[in-house]
Amino acid sequence: KDCNDSNGEAELVGVCKTYLTPISTCYNAQFLFPNDESWSDVDIFDELHYRPKMKRAPPNLKRTFYISKDGSCSSDVDYSWIQPFEVCEGPFGLPRPWGKFSLVDGDDVESDSLDEQEIGFSAVVSEE
Image (tube, rainbow, N blue to C red):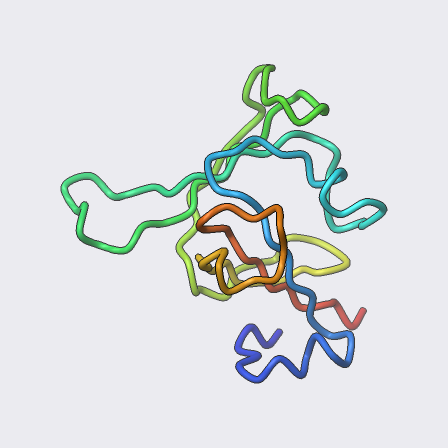
């Protein structure tokens, strides 16, 4: 359950996988990561969450899950949670039960579809 893969070797040997998701844009992970069993088929909306009266403190991630499944986030909210960045968290369930969320600059990532900032999630693959 090592969330501190600082040199990137864990992903190279298949122990860790990194995902990039947009901020403040509804998405469906099945469209972003087809056939990846780590994700459900419901719509997701990620946003930065600042603690009340602490606007200068680093933000957390607020992830909201919707009942809709078409990338619109047009249905009722199923549930949401707030997660600090850079904290090893879990268990999320198989196949990648532990992971760490990071706020990354989209300019540092090679892709034409990224906005200015995105959520990076590095997850450790279960050995079970």
